[in-house]
Image 1: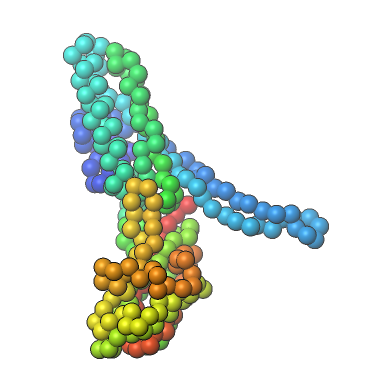
Image 2: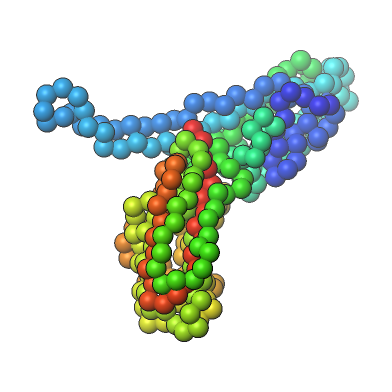
Length: 267
């Protein structure tokens, strides 16, 4: 049945699991935002010392159109509910999408599975809660990206980042010089990071900075090929960027091409 509210995990729609599933309501709660501040040293007012978002909840309410309290349908109702819970648990590894936020996804886990209640009551409305921890924002599926048009040892460009919340930048740096590079410095959104060491980026090699997502967190990694080069890094811990025009520059000991991308995030 085609419903007004449709929700999918890993591309599988909840209501596609069985024709008896009716998605009644999807609630996007306000994010759990935390702002810390200290009193101003000069009279009234406070100075903001930190702004962060801890979590974001998505609540789904659904019912099962099995309108009978016969024992056979009670068992069928229980079986179908178990199937739905297994689908919901898949959010641990797959993104959540809703039909009215096209092109965006939420990385969340099942925080509250629906209780079965009394299986003889055919008019029960079930509730389940998904909670986003590591990235408590709706995120663009497709990153906004910009690449240098020619190889150079230094240069600058601008990335236009959509959204209303901070995101993180992914970077690839390709050695185009034909000889090993000993140092690469990147500055993105006012934050600088240097990778240095003898031959750290071999001829034709690629330095990749990205942010893989696991069920527990999103993390930062930097590799040349498959080898981590975090030990060769100094400077910023990550490239967090705000929406708008993001300034990018680089400086290397030889010619490189640079690609920077980021996904818009939304409060």
